[in-house]
Amino acid sequence: ISYISGSIQAFDSAAFDKSIRISDLDTKDGTTLKASLLSDTAIEGVVITAVYSENDTLLAVKSDDAESEINIRLDGINGAEKIKVFWWNNTADMIPQALSETAFL
Image 1 (cartoon, rainbow, N blue to C red):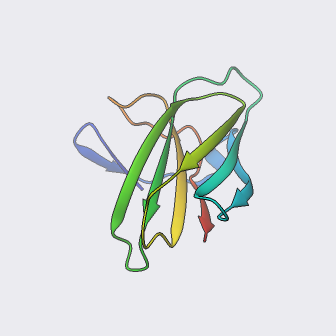
Image 2: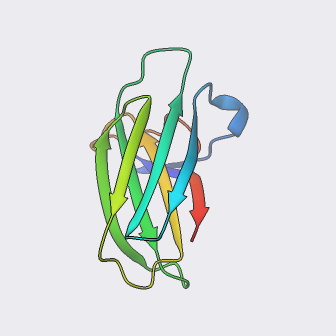
């Protein structure tokens, strides 16, 4: 479900031909992970990484330009329980390019 230009839209996973995979999650010295963006077409847009607490409070947000592989480093975030990675067309329209992917710490 997404809020776009004043309306709520629901997205079915079958509607996406792109996907996100999280790998190499490491919490030894800060938190690092790799986000792989998979697509049959050009990879464009922005990747948003959101960090949440146990009660789903948003603790931090980081953005990166969309690339086939993105190494993400998150330091100094206390109480983090999960990370969600979003792939949008841009930060103005925020149209999802793939379903978000979640990793639990």
